Image 1 (cartoon, rainbow, N blue to C red):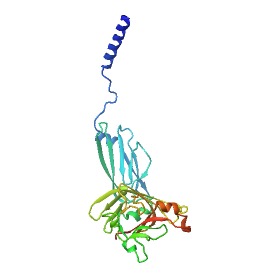
Image 2: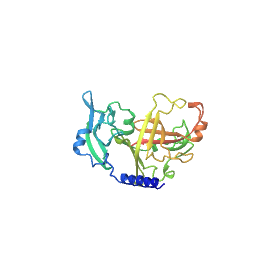
Image 3: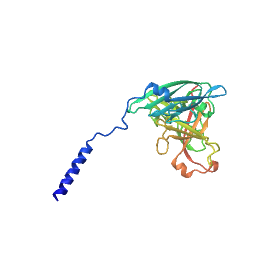
Length: 289
């Protein structure tokens, strides 16, 4: 029994000695990525089309032992290598920012400037939302009329505006976001900026998807506008007061924007197209000239 106890003590002591041996640091963290490494491994190629410098780029960071993010006009990509992607929707001077997460957890950023001679394969709605680069929208007070059409409020899905429970100035619904407030769409960064009447700002992003063919049973809508972090002016619906961030695009021209959300009660009672009615909240905007 004593021999067994001595053996157990010896093994335990041996394990303690082994555990105290220094561990080989196979993945020792190093410092920042150097400028030489950035030059060697970060590759940005602008695609030429029809002799023009286009809005499509290809990125690569093969061989660089770090997490790399390329921030361009329409978002960000984290890649080792990929094909050409659309990065901008307008011509002009543009920037691509490379953010590198170094092995020591610090971040290195470097900005690359490019000239886009022509933007190819761009959805025409970008120009409608953003003009030549950015466009500011305000409440379409001219769209209100003596027939009860208001710039914001509840109405039938097929109404021209808030005819049931609408108001000529949404200030009473959302303070600072009534007549006099502005909404700016920018093609660079898909930025959405709201400036309230008190001067305060709210910034976010927007995206849109247009329907390739009429939406079944709801053909008056042409697409959907989505917002993140910021949303449109007085974005609360008139049924439950929830803040909306997805809107049906009923009309979008160079000068007018009509957005709509079918309210929950309206979704229950709505019938396809003109067969019946559906309760909805309307927003009417016009472009600043």
